[in-house]
Image 1 (spheres, rainbow, N blue to C red):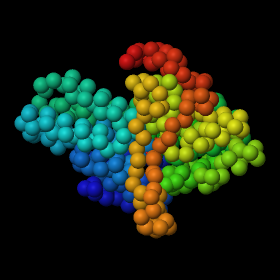
Image 2: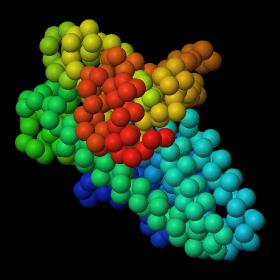
Image 3: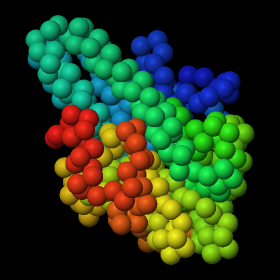
Image 4: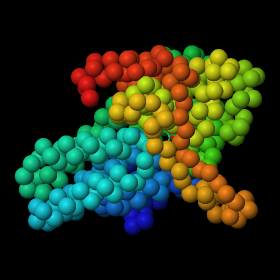
Length: 363
Ligand code: MRU
């Protein structure tokens, strides 16, 4: 990809997943963590789309924020172009970002919001439009952190003092603009003085659990134990897990949840062992246009991710591989959905519709 490496320093405290510096979008390179903390800079929508596709930045809300900045970057880049060229460039930017990854609905939600801003700007000169788009991207960045903090405050009440909490993948600060969704709930419970400990699945094949969640929690001083993806059933059967909490890439209108591959397996196991299974996701992850999980597009990634990792191949060359990056957990297995508006036990279509109505969003 065309983005440039900009710094190699270890971040002092907290995790800045995305930041706006000197007119460019800087992204912590999540492919390198936890070994190296490096930022790459994107100067165009194409570079941002490549960073999303290559998983420099990942996690549904972080992808949405990156895409919003990607649109703003393109507008700034084309600000001196004639109006027709500017609007053609903006359409191309939108298409490139929309094609980067298919499952996280936050990407499409962010693009729709920026398109609305663009349309509202009408015939203003391109530099003014670019300024508006950057403002909107910044607003979305701030709003995501606020939503995560609200989700954390609501969800923390679900975790008892001493709870041993299983999570899958990374739904932390790295997957969002800050604080995290599922990890945000755990962080807020920890901050409230609850002695929570976390068990994290390594999350094959990209290892978001082993590399990213374990890193974030260790930095925060929250006790964390790493397990292989096949271990959680054994621990549940021995009474060693009290609750499960995960994030989501897209929640269908009926409450079905698409999340990182392996989540469904964990939900079935939790149900078998009568362990609560919680999903933390902002309203921007709920897609009411999709009736059920069957219609959620599931990204299939390349075979190389499964045949090996980090340049080491352990499978026979050319062996057939399936690599769906997400699966769908039916709403019936979800004990509660935590959003920035509160805790929704047993999510379903009427409750989700009522939630959107209560925030004045009917469509
Ligand atoms: O492929 P990824 O790493 O982008 O998948 C991320 C997840 O599945 C997360 O659980 C989800 O996006 C929620 S992030 C708050």
